[in-house]
Amino acid sequence: MKLIVGLGNPGKAYAQTRHNMGFMVLDELVKQENLSFSNKPKFKGELLYTSLNNKDVLLLKPHTFMNLSGESVIIVKQFYQINLEDILVIYDDLDLPIGEIRIKQKGSSGGHKGLTSIINALNSENIQRIKIGIGRDEVIPVVDYVLGKFGKEEEKVISDAIKKSVMAIHDWLTYDILYVMNKYN
Image 1 (cartoon, one colour):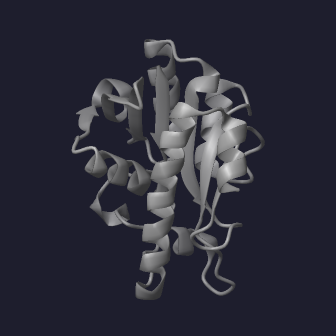
Image 2: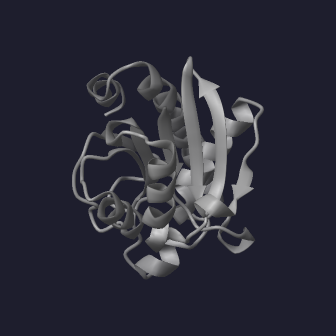
Image 3: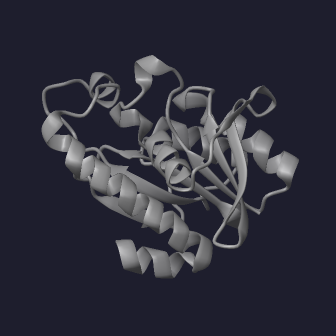
Protein backbone atom coordinates (compact mmCIF):
# COMPACT_ATOMS: atom_id res chain seq x y z
CA MET A 1 0.00 0.00 0.00
CA LYS A 2 1.14 3.53 -0.83
CA LEU A 3 0.56 6.64 1.29
CA ILE A 4 0.47 10.04 -0.40
CA VAL A 5 0.44 12.98 2.00
CA GLY A 6 -0.46 16.50 0.93
CA LEU A 7 0.61 19.16 3.41
CA GLY A 8 -1.43 22.22 4.29
CA ASN A 9 -3.48 23.85 7.00
CA PRO A 10 -7.14 22.95 7.54
CA GLY A 11 -9.99 25.45 7.38
CA LYS A 12 -11.40 28.00 4.98
CA ALA A 13 -9.05 30.73 6.17
CA TYR A 14 -6.10 28.76 4.75
CA ALA A 15 -7.73 27.39 1.59
CA GLN A 16 -5.84 28.30 -1.58
CA THR A 17 -2.88 29.79 0.30
CA ARG A 18 0.69 29.16 -0.79
CA HIS A 19 1.31 26.88 2.21
CA ASN A 20 -1.54 24.58 1.10
CA MET A 21 0.06 23.33 -2.13
CA GLY A 22 -0.04 19.72 -0.89
CA PHE A 23 -3.76 19.95 -0.20
CA MET A 24 -4.36 21.55 -3.61
CA VAL A 25 -2.53 18.76 -5.44
CA LEU A 26 -4.49 16.04 -3.66
CA ASP A 27 -7.74 17.93 -4.24
CA GLU A 28 -6.96 18.04 -7.97
CA LEU A 29 -6.12 14.33 -8.03
CA VAL A 30 -9.36 13.48 -6.20
CA LYS A 31 -11.34 15.72 -8.57
CA GLN A 32 -9.80 14.07 -11.65
CA GLU A 33 -10.64 10.62 -10.26
CA ASN A 34 -14.17 11.70 -9.22
CA LEU A 35 -13.56 10.69 -5.59
CA SER A 36 -13.92 12.44 -2.24
CA PHE A 37 -12.16 12.56 1.11
CA SER A 38 -13.68 11.56 4.44
CA ASN A 39 -12.85 13.28 7.71
CA LYS A 40 -11.16 10.71 9.96
CA PRO A 41 -10.57 12.11 13.48
CA LYS A 42 -8.83 8.85 14.47
CA PHE A 43 -6.12 9.69 11.92
CA LYS A 44 -6.15 13.46 12.61
CA GLY A 45 -7.02 14.30 9.03
CA GLU A 46 -8.95 13.62 5.87
CA LEU A 47 -8.27 10.21 4.39
CA LEU A 48 -9.21 8.45 1.18
CA TYR A 49 -8.54 4.81 0.37
CA THR A 50 -8.61 4.06 -3.34
CA SER A 51 -6.90 2.27 -6.19
CA LEU A 52 -4.74 4.25 -8.61
CA ASN A 53 -2.59 2.73 -11.37
CA ASN A 54 -3.53 -0.73 -10.03
CA LYS A 55 -2.07 0.10 -6.60
CA ASP A 56 -3.81 0.41 -3.24
CA VAL A 57 -3.37 4.02 -2.20
CA LEU A 58 -4.17 6.14 0.83
CA LEU A 59 -4.41 9.89 0.32
CA LEU A 60 -3.98 11.94 3.50
CA LYS A 61 -4.52 15.61 4.29
CA PRO A 62 -3.42 16.07 7.93
CA HIS A 63 -5.63 18.35 10.02
CA THR A 64 -2.99 18.89 12.69
CA PHE A 65 -1.87 22.17 11.13
CA MET A 66 1.38 22.26 9.21
CA ASN A 67 3.88 22.20 12.06
CA LEU A 68 2.41 19.00 13.54
CA SER A 69 1.84 17.05 10.30
CA GLY A 70 3.97 14.16 11.55
CA GLU A 71 1.37 13.32 14.21
CA SER A 72 -1.17 12.36 11.55
CA VAL A 73 1.33 10.66 9.24
CA ILE A 74 2.77 8.37 11.92
CA ILE A 75 -0.71 7.23 13.01
CA VAL A 76 -1.67 6.28 9.44
CA LYS A 77 1.72 4.68 8.73
CA GLN A 78 1.55 2.49 11.83
CA PHE A 79 -2.13 1.58 11.52
CA TYR A 80 -1.80 0.47 7.90
CA GLN A 81 1.78 -0.85 8.34
CA ILE A 82 3.11 1.21 5.43
CA ASN A 83 6.77 0.95 4.52
CA LEU A 84 8.78 4.17 4.56
CA GLU A 85 9.65 3.80 0.86
CA ASP A 86 5.91 3.74 0.05
CA ILE A 87 5.29 7.25 1.39
CA LEU A 88 5.23 10.38 -0.78
CA VAL A 89 4.87 13.86 0.73
CA ILE A 90 3.77 16.89 -1.32
CA TYR A 91 4.42 20.42 -0.09
CA ASP A 92 5.32 24.02 -0.97
CA ASP A 93 8.90 25.24 -1.31
CA LEU A 94 9.96 28.87 -0.89
CA ASP A 95 13.34 28.25 -2.50
CA LEU A 96 11.99 27.05 -5.85
CA PRO A 97 10.71 29.51 -8.45
CA ILE A 98 6.95 29.73 -8.53
CA GLY A 99 5.38 26.79 -10.35
CA GLU A 100 8.54 24.68 -10.59
CA ILE A 101 8.33 21.17 -9.19
CA ARG A 102 11.16 19.05 -7.84
CA ILE A 103 11.05 15.37 -6.93
CA LYS A 104 13.41 14.18 -4.20
CA GLN A 105 14.17 10.75 -2.84
CA LYS A 106 15.39 11.92 0.58
CA GLY A 107 17.07 14.74 2.43
CA SER A 108 16.64 17.32 5.14
CA SER A 109 13.50 19.39 5.54
CA GLY A 110 15.17 22.51 4.17
CA GLY A 111 13.49 24.42 6.98
CA HIS A 112 9.93 23.37 6.04
CA LYS A 113 8.27 22.81 9.41
CA GLY A 114 5.64 20.36 8.11
CA LEU A 115 8.33 18.13 6.63
CA THR A 116 10.45 18.55 9.78
CA SER A 117 7.52 17.22 11.81
CA ILE A 118 7.19 14.20 9.52
CA ILE A 119 10.94 13.49 9.54
CA ASN A 120 10.92 13.61 13.35
CA ALA A 121 7.82 11.41 13.65
CA LEU A 122 9.16 8.80 11.23
CA ASN A 123 12.72 9.15 12.54
CA SER A 124 14.08 9.27 8.98
CA GLU A 125 15.02 11.70 6.22
CA ASN A 126 14.42 8.92 3.64
CA ILE A 127 11.07 10.36 2.63
CA GLN A 128 10.19 10.72 -1.02
CA ARG A 129 8.64 14.05 -1.92
CA ILE A 130 7.29 16.44 -4.48
CA LYS A 131 8.19 20.05 -3.77
CA ILE A 132 6.25 22.80 -5.53
CA GLY A 133 7.85 26.18 -5.88
CA ILE A 134 5.99 29.15 -4.48
CA GLY A 135 8.87 31.60 -4.83
CA ARG A 136 9.84 34.09 -2.18
CA ASP A 137 9.06 37.74 -1.62
CA GLU A 138 11.85 40.06 -0.52
CA VAL A 139 9.45 42.47 1.24
CA ILE A 140 6.64 40.37 2.73
CA PRO A 141 7.65 38.41 5.86
CA VAL A 142 7.82 34.64 5.23
CA VAL A 143 4.88 33.76 7.52
CA ASP A 144 2.61 36.31 5.85
CA TYR A 145 3.80 35.27 2.40
CA VAL A 146 3.18 31.51 2.80
CA LEU A 147 -0.22 32.14 4.37
CA GLY A 148 -1.15 34.54 1.56
CA LYS A 149 -3.06 33.67 -1.59
CA PHE A 150 -1.65 33.61 -5.09
CA GLY A 151 -2.07 36.70 -7.24
CA LYS A 152 -4.04 36.58 -10.49
CA GLU A 153 -0.85 36.51 -12.56
CA GLU A 154 0.40 33.48 -10.56
CA GLU A 155 -2.77 31.38 -10.76
CA LYS A 156 -2.14 29.89 -14.23
CA VAL A 157 1.44 28.93 -13.34
CA ILE A 158 0.28 27.29 -10.10
CA SER A 159 -2.60 25.50 -11.85
CA ASP A 160 -0.11 24.03 -14.33
CA ALA A 161 2.24 23.00 -11.48
CA ILE A 162 -0.64 21.26 -9.69
CA LYS A 163 -1.58 19.31 -12.83
CA LYS A 164 2.07 18.41 -13.44
CA SER A 165 2.34 17.21 -9.81
CA VAL A 166 -0.69 14.95 -10.30
CA MET A 167 1.02 13.44 -13.36
CA ALA A 168 4.16 12.94 -11.25
CA ILE A 169 2.08 11.10 -8.62
CA HIS A 170 0.77 8.69 -11.28
CA ASP A 171 4.34 8.12 -12.48
CA TRP A 172 5.53 7.59 -8.90
CA LEU A 173 2.89 4.89 -8.49
CA THR A 174 4.08 3.15 -11.66
CA TYR A 175 7.85 3.66 -11.86
CA ASP A 176 10.77 3.91 -9.46
CA ILE A 177 11.69 7.24 -7.90
CA LEU A 178 14.83 7.71 -10.04
CA TYR A 179 12.76 7.56 -13.23
CA VAL A 180 10.32 10.11 -11.80
CA MET A 181 13.15 12.39 -10.71
CA ASN A 182 14.77 12.23 -14.15
CA LYS A 183 11.47 12.95 -15.88
CA TYR A 184 10.37 15.94 -13.78
CA ASN A 185 13.55 17.52 -12.45
